[in-house]
Image (cartoon, rainbow, N blue to C red):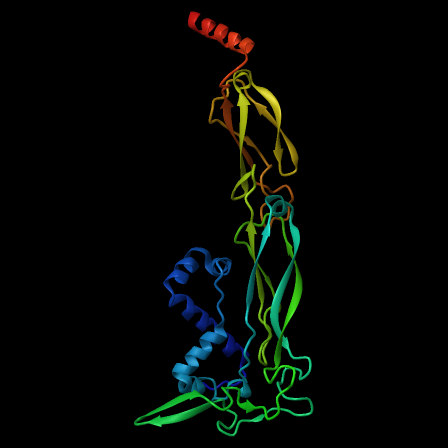
Length: 321
């Protein structure tokens, strides 16, 4: 069917292009099967349907011209979407727990302020390409076959610029640095990716691309993260292990009270409910993981003489039993 300018058809084609890109790459296919599209984004893969479209057009230009109502590239309804960009931000474990705002600096393409993105000098405008008659593609007959390729004159744009803009030299775009403030919610983890719509590169007659911000949570010297739970090693003395004690340990929100039961053994794990990481996306501030404490019993290597005598007395008492 012929459907020039049909946005739904364009979107369907882009979906097909994205699927082709994933299926044709074994590594991307494996990641997508396990983690979905978010997994691809989190590992630095970005799918640009426009690049795949250009590849398809170079291979099967004539067939796609028929499918979408004739050639012409952007001059006949096809608008190139801007490129997506991806950046990484580093946060501490405590920042990840409470949520934090991060400023992201990005060098991205924007429409030229002098020519408004046309690429032509002020007072002039692009003209239709005479070689391809504005279609953006030309046909070559080779024996029994007709091969359609990108027009060498206009490079697929369907138009030519007689007098280029002096600022962007006909590109219609300029590189500028932008600063975006990204709000990271409580509970983010390494690999969490957030999309900033329209913050990517400027399109060529189409919409701007998006910015994807991927989080990298730094290791904490005390607290080890395992999903939404936190794990910490706690060292106690022999007497505390035998008799038990109340103590305080550092947590995300300050000191956490801990009850060490009498007879605690080396390697025992104690649980403090609700003192782990907030669950990402939860509306309740109380929806958190747990804090797990792995107990280590510190045995003195060279105790003072008085302490040593006490241990000797204990040994005698244990021997008499």
